[in-house]
Length: 188
Ligand code: SF4
Ligand code: SF4
Image (cartoon, rainbow, N blue to C red; front, side, top):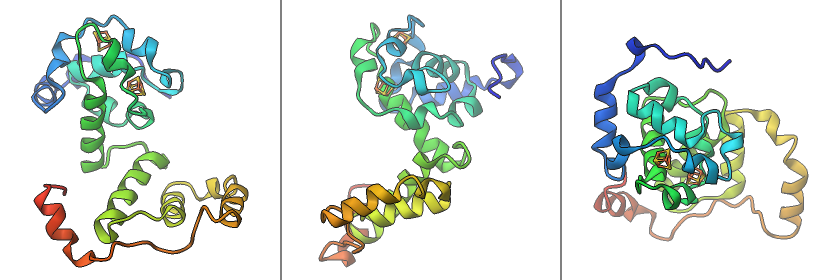
């Protein structure tokens, strides 16, 4: 169950400062807690913490709560919050920064498919230069919750019959040049 009570001793203000120094996160400490971001977010009713609360958690240094939340993975990067924020805080960039850290320290919610999908997508693109939807979804399900495949097989079958989903593993022609190209763009 989500614990709502927070204790000061659990907070890490140093971490909050580090987040605020990352590109796109500079406005963190100017948040007014007005709630405009949560009001405009199309997904806030599905989130465990609304965008306003995520900003509050990060700014106070509640690292584990913020990094292990489902909110950061449900964010669809629509930028509505950033557009409506009276302080022009780039909330979407804060979400991206939290996602990266959650993956780095494996703090994302257990058996939650979205972070697994992000990881598998990156792995596939790093290896082959392209993603293949069938294999991507299969790997995501096997690593998070295989039962979700039961709810997907009919749609998958229909997509295959319509020629919109293939079992083929796509790759770019010059796969050998990928590591060099990615390194040049500082993708790690
Ligand atoms: S809209 Fe901006 S100022 Fe208002 S709560 Fe959200 S982040 Fe803070
Ligand atoms: S960018 Fe994310 S947090 Fe902001 S409004 Fe869109 S879905 Fe909500």
